[in-house]
Image (cartoon, rainbow, N blue to C red; front, side, top):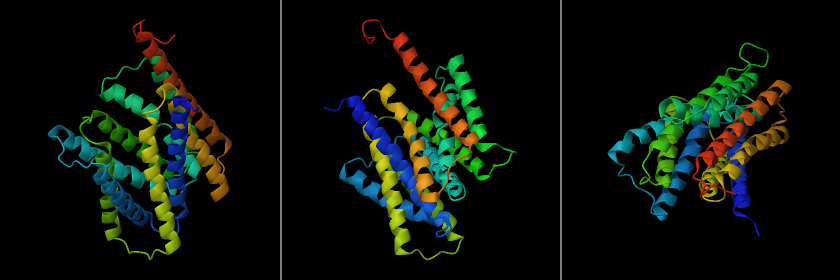
Length: 298
């Protein structure tokens, strides 16, 4: 019989692989479909599916509490900007490199929560965050051979996703997750629609539409798996499996696009992943140390 931890880990891996499959489908369209147009078509599909799902499950609630309105608005804007920055970069740089930079998210979220939400962060974890940022610089290498301006777009995506996740943390529990996801998808759709309005519309073939549908299924699957895995198993066991996205990106990048990162990029990726795992280890250790003796695990 499969344990809850193994079930949660499997869901985490499935969710991360689904994210990368979405990325691969979108990247495969580079040179064939303008990226804003690709964003818009995927946004239409994702918004329609999420709307139907939210209505069917009774999780569509557009009567948002006054305190949540600005958070939802800012989160939706960040969702659109994140898609813009990341997909534009994905169209112009190796898949694994882009996904590797995204692995800094646990570090930036922890730092932002410390700076803006007052969440505790000791010197060990602060040091780990600084070391992790060194790893990011090894991947980006500004001013050196191998540097691409598109890496800065991924870094911008990390910044806006950090803000997005902070806004999500501050929302009240009365706001259904599917409503938040639907509004985020709608925001991406509207943002990209504005961009496509000032550009010529390129004809889209049926194979390209199928690729966009595959990307839509990937992003929706990633969302569903991410929600399910948070309800199964211990967080300390499940969360490290989020780095499976980097493994998936390396494999798909090599098989589909013939790409493989250089040694410095791989070293930087290892540093970022290592510091993220250390952050998780410290968090679990501190939580256990602060728990009352009567409820500590033996």
